[in-house]
Length: 124
Image 1 (tube, rainbow, N blue to C red):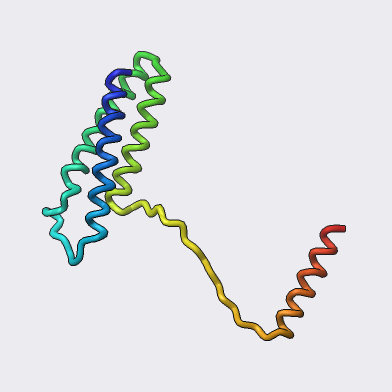
Image 2 (image 1 turned 135 degrees about the vertical axis):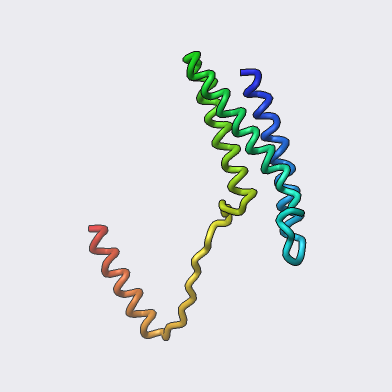
């Protein structure tokens, strides 16, 4: 359980550095050389943490310590989420679908009457 806490602390520290790096990437202009990408070391660290979490999970399953195994799975899930965010595979923005219609008053009245007719029949 101690190693899992260490992995968890390291993930939290990497998560904060990822947020700083992605903020810097959004503010930069022009294409970046992939080899100059400052997130590469962070990605390697995350992959190493994922390997550690897998080792902890496997060892705890062999010992039948399911509580630690479940905690390591949770950390592994968190690490994979961070890797996906870092790679741009996970979009956290909620899409908003907005439709603006311009209709004449007569059509609006017909639509409203149809809606009210359907709503009142369902209510009964």
